[in-house]
Image (cartoon, rainbow, N blue to C red; front, top):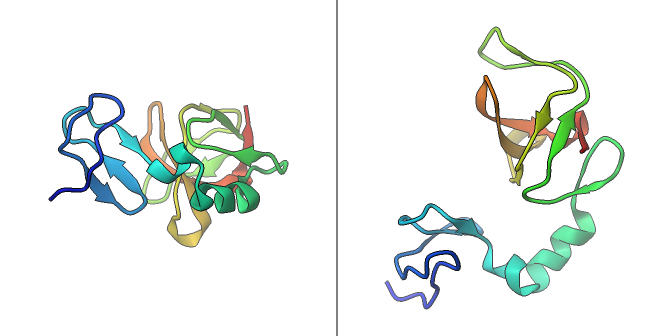
Length: 119
């Protein structure tokens, strides 16, 4: 499989595509080549963009704060309002869950952008 791309982090040639992202199995780095070059794909996402509860545009790697207590589906735990979440990743999730993140003490989960504000 010759795709001509190399990992920007470790320069490995063994990369594969998963949706819009490219993934390096050697260093686990994930990136979007369209966003890095500024092609039309990133221009569309910048115009439409994922916005927080106050209308601020969110981007991959941003830190956000949860604005209200959120019940975790399938668990008895709760994400408390005021919880800071670092290094978010924007995704096209089901049911409006468009933020993928890890929360300390709870683990990996998806959030809706309407329940967070940019930190």
